[in-house]
Image (cartoon, rainbow, N blue to C red):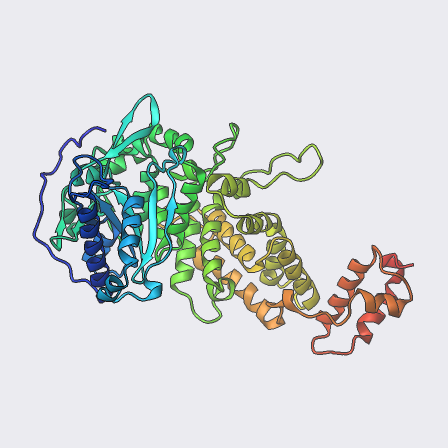
Length: 541
């Protein structure tokens, strides 16, 4: 791994942190365990299992916890770096230390304060180069891993991982602000790569040469985007210059599993300001490396010039949420919020024609669904919503136009209610399908802020959609998918004197449409009569 062109001097400022009572309890416990393990392994016992020449243990809390502590942000996850022992071996010694009742009492440990050990094995093919041991301690999730250095060669995409020093460990990290240590023994912050200065300047910078850093592990490109958007920091211009380098993006496609890309994207979109992450992805030219099917050689590349209008609109709607507003009516949970932002990332794909039908005659999976499912491994539930949003968008626009233009059918409650039930039954979460239609409409009709073009203003387009949703509220069909039917198939079959068959589903829809036209009526007789009247049309024997 090449050194940075202008490396900062190694410094260890005298900075202390104020720990919470639980953090103090954890620190004392870990120091006690370290001394116990050293006494056991480095003592005179002939049964010592210590590696020859092992140094006494030094424990450091590393990375995000130190950064967040210095920023005044609460953190419940702590990474513990160990100088001379693997994480799994240390946790084994820690549990042996905690087995003695007097030690548990000395540290004030309750039964639930020491959880079960969970080890995530190394997986070089997915850029997981070292096993990590995790255990719940004193109400905190604590990871243990040894300090290491990583050496990359051109012959292999996976590094050689060895025990390393604190400085070598700091240098291999993705950003200087994530390379700070808190030494449990001295109670001081250790800064070996200039992270404190960068924290003060609100700067995301790589400890080593940025291009080599990204070629070694291309996922660091997305991690820097996530940290910059989460913290409100700017990315070092030297790093920005090479984040979209063709070599880096090429390695991102072949070296990093799409599951890991999905994890980074999910964290971005679930953060407080997902729009900041999308602005960076857009500005830095990263879109096609993330939202694509890397296994498909002929995967098209949509234009992204108008994408900004879509994600900026969603941010505008979220920030300006009020009772009865578009966002308030359509985004009703934290999961829906994440799905909404995921849908916003896929609006560029709507400008492209669908793939030809499959050899079986079935329609091909929509391109936005392919980009999500294969690009960032969207879960099935989200993929279903994306597919439905794409396929139902024309129908959603037609109903919007009826309201906007005051066309015939405006007051037909059954038309709107049955459409909503159909959208929801074929993919789920019809509200997000409408949100997708809104964002695509904005991208198609409104030029990004500061740019020329576009046939309408954002306010005018959103006013049209607000009127549409207000009309759905007035018709009282927002909860149409959950309306309880007055009649079921058995009741209809009995009343009509026939056996259930292929006619049952369409007949039930006729009955439900009657029900929607007659809100508040609880007697099913009218619905049954409507089915009887249309008996021949429905093919009822």
